[in-house]
Image (cartoon, rainbow, N blue to C red; front, side):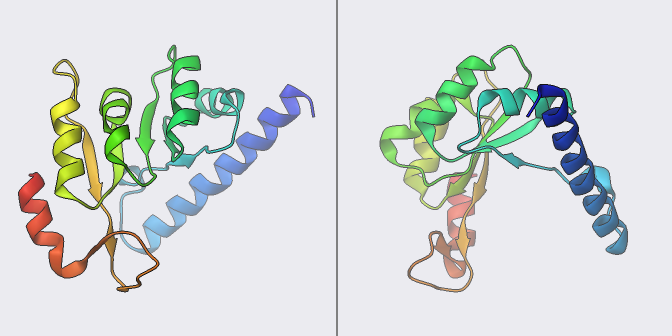
Length: 156
């Protein structure tokens, strides 16, 4: 596939998703501008991320740290908002704190505290999302709903 054809295909797909967001927002009385589209790019080449960025996409999610770090380095000339969306192990917190703007799978105070402590002072605070297992399924990650308030207060 040519680059032009690939870009047109990506433009079409992004526009379809953006239109679905507008329609859903309007159906529920929300401002479409208040909704963030996060493009998950795991296993996609940096060239695809660059194309999506050229089409106006600014937020990208990765869940494999090593793959993400390579892409971040390759695309450092772009103003990308990087989101880490995978499970976070203690040995990965420094890179996440230094390279990402968002961490989406916080389920322990220890991880949140490490991310905060390792965040460079010259960077804005790291945005975090607490992962909650609302179905109490043992195979699913996240904290129990009953633990949410306590964790939120602890990492505030």
